[in-house]
Image (cartoon, rainbow, N blue to C red):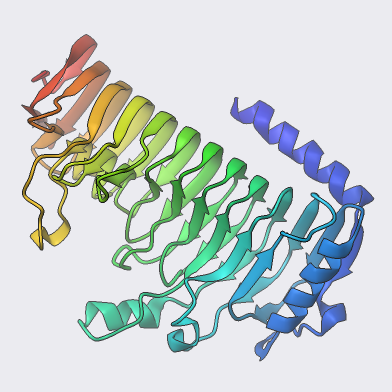
Length: 388
């Protein structure tokens, strides 16, 4: 699937950019010096592209462009083929208070047919991380790049550095394709999820690499038909479905595939997490396959008593129903003795769990497995010995 999708994206972008009317942000006053505020120039370029009745390309040449918070709104766009071709770097304001009241740094809302090709987004997040880790009163920070209520999105060969908060968020979208994405932040940076997907359908993430201080990919309520392939994670908290169960009435997660992934030195590998409180949500029809773990603290984990830092824990029973989750060809090393942990809901046990050809070691010996309220089957060689 990965090769076919990659070739399709390549020819799609080649066709649309070759026919597009082009707008250079410098024509609208942007300066590549990293100091001059180019926010208005980027907004003006977007407005011009939006007003075009034919495919449009917004070109960002080499250099560093200082940009404040922008909302690229597609409500009134006359075309559905706008490509950002970025050869330079977009730089967030150095003072994190400038974005204190902005939920997002670069936001796309109600757009159709937007592509972002190349470029670096530098969120300048380190001073805010330091503020948070020092326990001071700090703003939450801004997500670097968000897509909301949008469809037919392509993100190709984009790099996100040092986001204040989440790097890339996909919320309430349809048909989103990402490939060659790189996310880099300190392994201790707080709440800097690499790619977060929720309330969205048909999202594909290919040939990408995330190293950050939180989940490499987090999959929230309402995510359906998500495909992740050829993915590298570390440092970070792994690929996580959840956390689920924050709300009593919550959409479920279903039809998720993670295939050909490597995890190095991460807190978790393949994780499903939910709060221990009543909820209508669920996670079902999930396939984790062809994953390599190297020194991962929790390679395989379902945690239905999720409560980070053990603060204000709900201490009830999770209403999230976890079912039909397959782990196929998962191998490598665990940094802890318990390499497989299924800690499921006592009221709604995990069902349909399948372990197929799993081999995880701890040091020079076999690791252990731990199960609570989990039902399933085993096939092929499975080490540690199954507790299902």
